Amino acid sequence: MSTLMWVRTLYLTLTLTQLSVDSFPVSDKIVSLPGQPMVSFQQFSGYVTVDEKQQRSLFYYFVEAENDLRHSKPLVLWLNGGPGCSSVGAGAFIEHGPFKPNAGDSLFENDYSWNKEANMLYLESPAGVGFSYSTNKSFYTTLNDAITAQDSLTFLQRWFTKFPEYKNRHFFIAGESYAGHYVPQLAQLIVNSKEKFNLKGIALGNPSLEFNIDLNSEDEYNWNHGVISDSSYELLTKVCNSSRFRRELTTAGPLSEECIRVFTQVLQEQTQYRNDLEYFVTGDVCLSSSVSDDDYNDQALNKSLYPALSMPNLDHLLPPSLKLQLEKAHHHHLNLHGHDDQQQVTHKYQKSDACAQQEVAKYLNRKDVHKAFHAQLFGVKQWNLCNRDVQYVVDQELPTILVVGSLVRSGIRVLVYSGDQDAVIPFFGTRRLVNRLAKDLGLETTDPYRAWFESKQIGGWTQVYGNNILSFATIRGASHTAPAAQPERSLLLFKSFLAGKSLPKA
Image (cartoon, rainbow, N blue to C red):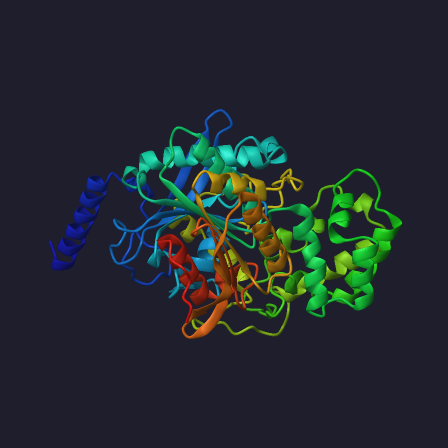
């Protein structure tokens, strides 16, 4: 036997022995992802069946803490929203996972990965999202918050049998956007269940918490940032605001004439760039032609970039004038994402990659990546960042801020944070909700509203209530997906939250 063969055999033997000692599933271990650099941590991925009768299985990607710190670091479950968007694609590969794609061909190491501070578990939920699936396709038309929460709880119960070492570890749940529904409701199920999983806290980024305040804050934010005129803002405040418009869109009746008039004017002012800028007002759009012109470029785009376009049976509700404005925004968005002759140069040192969605879609649609991930495509032709076949019954009227309050009463620490350049769920609406919740709970302010710092620069602003049981923070310069736009600041915020420490004052 050659020396090289002997070394490889010894390495494999030691690896399998270690996995056996740790009781980890050998079949789920990732040897190496295509194009990844050498790393100091283990990765696992695979499926956990949550419903045998429906043959419903959820896909996970588990990244242990780096530098052999997994024994001392907490476990964090990450959930992206949408609803219908992938925690693996968005959370792991665009935001705060260990790797980011380089034009979809290879991976480079993320210097601000959250696995520096925690063992990160990314779950594609509900079934139908990413690589997760149900063989009963009719299930995709009945999805709602209750089913998603219960499936996620079942997933955790069974995942901990695969990884028993982590069952008593300090456990946190984090997520963003519509995960403002997912995370609190899952946490509430855990608190009410016999298996507590040692849940310590939850973190909610730019979360959907209360329908009216979330939606109408968007009007105020767009006006403050010069995206709409004084005339339009006056119409939004006096005639038809965003919450009324959205409510009319999701009912069976026709749109009111006043809402048609208001939003036709608003969309004309926001121009065809609306879909690109509302998630990152000061960000640039992708002008890359480096991603091939495949049909997945359309499907890969976040379906919630303009939620009205994804609502079922929308065509018969919209008058031609308003529908035309929406279609202009949608088609221009597609033209800017992989269909333009100009190029967006991307490299390792960019803080925010405007073409990240396309690069991730290209990478996660590679067959060698599927093999390395132990993943398969069930009933779909390609992996999508957000699955439009998932017809989620959005419980938009449920104020999950009340569920957050119940968790605080149960002793669960809560961090609510906002990227301050997000126009979809703007920070000042969220700040109002958290402040109101603190008053309703009778929590005193223990750290008054102030700036916090990262690398001697202002990282954002924060306020803490009830000796750190409830806290709010902004991340300066961050988008709806805060860690993608401000990775250093987001990592510091995450680290402080896990440790239960105040954000730096200088």
